[in-house]
Amino acid sequence: MDIDLPTVWAGIIAFAVLAYVVMDGFDLGIGILFPLFPEKEDRDVMMNSVAPVWDGNETWLVMGGGGLLAVFPLAYATILPALYAPLTVMLLALVFRGVAFEYRWRSDTGSRRWDVAFFGGSAVATFTQGIALGALVQGIAIENREYAGGWWDWLTPFSIATGFALLAGYALLGACWLVLKTEGSLHASARKLAIRAGVVTLAGMGVVSLWTPFLNPGYLERWFGWPTVGFSLVVPLLVAGAAYGLWRGLTRGPDWLPFLSALGLFVLGFAGVGISFYPWIVPFALTIEEAAAPDESLVFLLWGSVALLPMILGYTAYAYWVFRGKLRHGEGYH
Image (cartoon, rainbow, N blue to C red; front, side):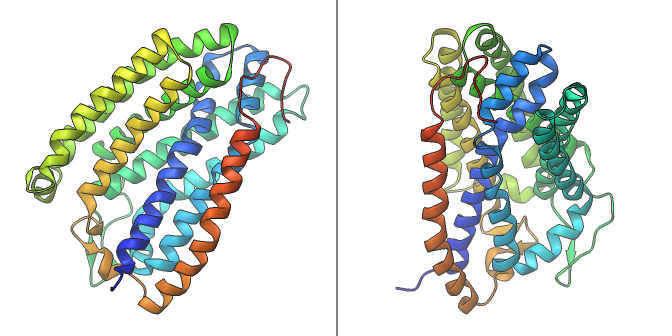
């Protein structure tokens, strides 16, 4: 039986990107929420709640980007020129945020400045990720297998809207993570913030979802043609179920339910993007088959991923298991 290698690799890279979004999303959300917790003790607990896992979460970003280069080189060569500006800013913000994370613990007099840096790096990285996603959804101009657009094509009202929607979504993940990991007044404040962020996130998802079909007639066909119309009918019900789980968990518990429900919202949103795109890797300009490397390269790389993916999943699961449970003031891993 022949294996559709480009589709298999598209699934692997999509999984890596989703893993990055849901894992790094909540620790970026912690940074976004920093200004809303002025007490140093609360900020210490917030940072300690992600200290054991935040850098490992970014492994998935490296895998997604590296996989795109190796497996779909034509897509890499056309997407990157279109998104150089937001992606460069995103990477610089992630570096700045990582430096702030480490130096905050080592500065007695400048911790407030590093707090600002941690918030700024988190917020800018999130916003530029949303802008890049919006720019990709709205389409990239390609002619003769090369990027044919302008320097500022990525900056549109739609991409800005997706940037703000992702800020709200990551803030929701961060607040729900704090509900899961903390106690006392910090826990209570996180519950209230999660409710507000949840409302804004759902509103943002609604705006982006209603806007997307009008960007290109192809999206209308994908969403309301057969058989994908079934997904379009089911998803609102699933989103409503996740929203109910979020509300129930934040008002009555248990503490794990809000985080799980918020992850569900992101998975559903990501699945919607996948349904809208497939079989395109650059919407309505470049398909997965057209962008893929030769089959020999895909097979060689697939063997490597078969060996590495279980290892990455294993050590990630182990890290989360070891550092499970609630975190209290005065405790930490730094």
